[in-house]
Image (tube, rainbow, N blue to C red; front, side):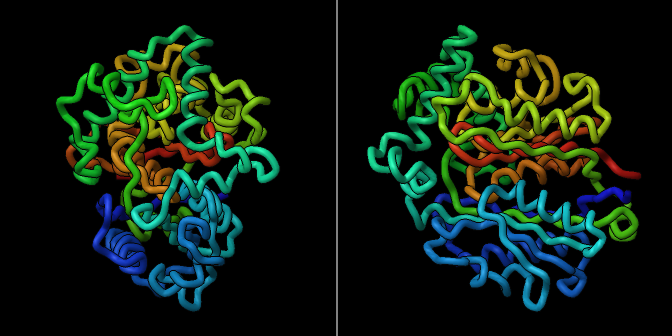
Amino acid sequence: MEKVGIVGYYQVKPELDAMMSPYEMIYTAVKGALNSAKLKRKDITTVVSCTNDYYDGKTISNTFKVEAGGAYMKDESKVEMDGAYAALYGLYRILSGNHKLAMIYGFSMPSCFPYEIARILETDPTFDRQINLLNPYTAGGLQMKSYMKTYRVPEEDIAKIAVHNLKNSSKNLLALPDAQKAGITVQDILNSKVLSAPLRELMYPMLCDGATALILAPERQSLKITENPVWITGVGHCQETYYLGDRDLSVSVSMEKAAEKAYKLAEINDPKNEIDVAEIFGHTACEEVILAEATGLCEKGKGVYLLNDGPVLNPSGGAMSAFTPCACGLTRIVEAAKQIRGEAEGHQISDVKKAVATGQIGFCAQNNVLFVLEGGEK
């Protein structure tokens, strides 16, 4: 089976309230990805978008974005989850042998809709939605409380993860300016407003408008397009039960199983020592730690030690650098690819050969996907 390569990508600089229309933002991302690979729209054979009808305020909202996304008269579909799942769908389309070039993009403008309120529509309509107690804040607080209690982790350790990400964001030229906090301290995190105890405001990423695009191609096509493709050597995904009361929130079983599948395909036996960079999408600083532990990059309950030992965790700042719903996981893939190609301007890690990137959806990361990326010929 041919390998599949990442041959182009582009991220629109995120903003709290972008002065672009949705169509202009999507066009900019798609056109930028094509330009980065020196390709034309005619070269695209399939387009997979990641948007959400609830967020867009329209039914079958992708139909309004066909032209902007380069999908006019092309094979086109949409994923209503996270952009990393759109990349997974695009990967399957390439592996099917039916397509030679897949354009993937993720987009959202939360400045135009109440994200936390819209997510309540994900909850069980006969109970959770009626009492309106389960939302991204309360779920994050329950998850953090469970993790801290299970492993006896102090709040200060979670704050250290937030500090790490926000300081890394200050080096990322494509991070949200409001998230670029070079001088932030643990005490600043602990002094920030409580969202849902013990989750605090500076442990939760800032929502912003943005779009990210990525181009996938089979091996022979990839090598014609670029001398430096990034290969997807492993991928795994898994979903666990919706009900939080039926899950141990201190761990992520779905991420453990997703990572196990991906590592098997990529022939990785010791992820902590074989992986150079990990771009982990966590909705909160604590969730990022739980997911990093589930990927086998460190022992359970010891995630804070990743800051000093093991793969470099989120050199981009992760979701804390800029959280665009429907694009965040795709951005993690792009950031990992940049590290491998040496194109992570301002936050490049030296000699990166292998990286992992994750995406997720659902309260407390109910559904997870993990990609293993490796460098191509130089």
